Image (cartoon, each protein chain N blue to C red):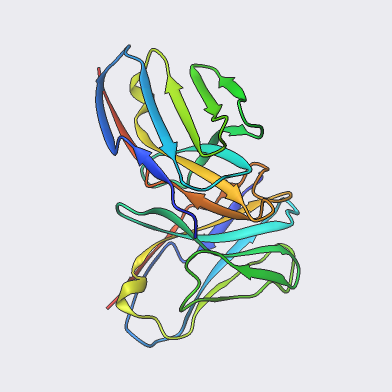
Length: 113
Length: 111
């Protein structure tokens, strides 16, 4: 079954404690992206990756890092989380750019205390 | 980043009614996308529009890419209870690599 998986689905952490949210897709997609969703703001793109070792900033990259060492994985790293990063995070992938159907993961709800 | 204004923010409609929502921007986009998100799920693509003036249907859904490339609308005809959800528009720019989402329209259908 074609899918995008994210882990964990829920996470409560404290300010400053480094964390990683994993994202994996089994569709051999080149394009992957991370979004955060906040009430009244819709989804905002954090980072995207066109292929292995190719990443670039989206609209709200501050406080986040990503890496793309393998085609299937695109982890989101918060080196020093802060409360304003409390949000619902989605990973997405598509075969080319965002013009192709993006498959979204189930979401990770992060709370930073 | 680019800004997308989506309206209305929310709608309560009677089952069977038609629905219309739109997105506008001061910026030009290369592609317009419409997504639906149900509670606890990620967004799912409904319609993609690639050319200015393009009108595309997907069942009871119809969307258009504005001729100025700065707006798009989505119509849902004869709404049913399973249409409930949040509808997002999204615009692509920057060589089709960057995506900006609208703030969403929350649709409630009263049976």
